[in-house]
Image (cartoon, rainbow, N blue to C red; front, side, top):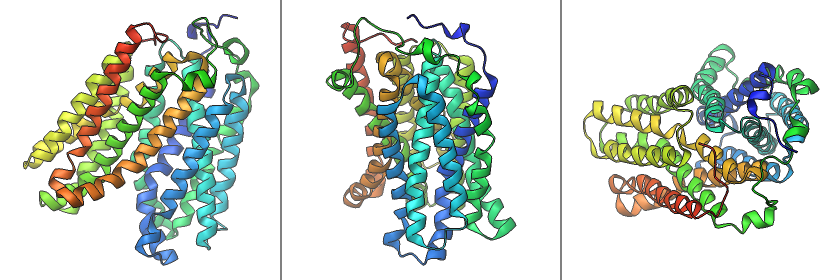
Amino acid sequence: MAHPSEGSLPDNRELKFASYLGMFNSGLLNSAVGPLLIELTGFYQLNVARVGLPVLLDGTGYLLGTIILSFVWKVHRARLVLCLSTLSLVFLLVSIGPFHSRFEVFLGLMFFLGSGFGFLTVGLDSLFSEIYRQNRAKYLNILHLFFGVGSFLGPLAVVAILKATGKWFYFYPLIGLLNIPMLPLLLRRKNYPFGLDLEGGETDGRHEGIRNLMGSAAFWAIIAAMFLHLGMEASFGAWMPLFLKSTRNMTPTLASYCVSIFWLAFLLGRASYARLFPDVNLFLSLIVAISGAALFMCLTFLSRDAALIFSSTFCAGLLLSIVYPNFLALGAGIFPNRIGFITGTLSASGGVGYMFFPWLIGPVSQSLGLAKGVFMIPLLGTASIGILLLLRSHKKGGATTTPPS
C-alpha cells in the first residue's frame, strides 16, 4: 500500500505538543544530572569513586532502552510505545521522592528511568521520521530544539527547587508532574491516523530485514560516524571548562559561561536550520557542519583571547546543533523500511561515544598534556567526515536508497 504524503496527514497539534513536551522534559533531566551530583555527593556521603554511578546507571539504562526500542518499533505501535514509556516515567520520577533515602534504590530507579527515556526519545524520533518523510531534517531539528531548551533550563530548575525547598529529591517528582499532560494526548486514538497507512513505508523493491541491514556497509558506516560525532560533541562540552581554567587561566565562572554560550548556540542553530535551511542536502549539511565545528574547536584551543574563545565556541555550537537530528534523518532516508531500528541503533552508538570519548580524553591528556590532548576532539570530527565521504561515494554507486534532502 502506498503511504500518504505528509501533506495529506492532518496537522496534529496535540501529538506535536505531547512530543515537544516529552523532549523538553528529557532535556531537563539530561542537564540536571551534573548540578544534582553535588547534592547527591553530600546526601549519600559518596567518595569520588562512587560519584559517577548515577550517571553510569542512567546512561546504561538509556542505551538498553534505545536498543530494545530499535527492535520493537513499528509505526502502528506508536500509541502503545509512547503511552507506556510516559506512564512508566511518571511512576519512576514520582517514586524517587519517597524512596530516595537508600543509595542502592536510587541507583535502580535511575537505571529504569534512563531506559524509559531511551524508549520515549527514540520513539519520538522514529515517529517524526515516519510521519514527516519529505522534511525529516526540518521536523527532527524542531523536535530536538525542545530538548535543547530543556537542557538549557535544567540547571536553572535545580537551583530554583533547591532554593525553594532545600531538598534535591523534589526535583524528580516535579518533573514527573510535567509528564502528566502528555498522557491524555498520547492516549487518544484519533491522534494516530497514519498507523496502518504508513506501515511498511517506502521501498526500493526489497524488504530490508534486520540481518540484511546489519550486513550492509552503509549501516556500519553511519553508525561509526554517529559514534565519533557524539564523542566529539560530548568531549568538547566536558573538557572545555577545565582546559580554559588550566591552560588559559580563566576563572571557573567565566569558563562556565563559555559552556552556557555553547549550549545556547545549539538552540539558535536548530531554530535557524528548521526555518532557513529545510531542504539542504543531508550529506552536504553534515560534512559542512562537522568540518566547520572542528575548525572552530581548534580555534578555541589555540586562542588566548577571551573574546575569540567565546565567539569560536559559539560558532562551534551553532554548527554542531544540526548534526544529531540530520544524522537521524539521513539514516531514516537510507533505510526507510527500518526507521525504528536505524534510529535506535544510531542513538545507542552515539550514546556509547558520548560516554566513551570524554573518558578517553583523560588518559590521552595525562600522557600528552591537556593543551595537546584536547586536539583529539576535533580529530574525531575529521574521522566522522571521512566516513561520511566514503558513505556518500558508496551511495552514488547505487548501493542504497537515496535519502530525501
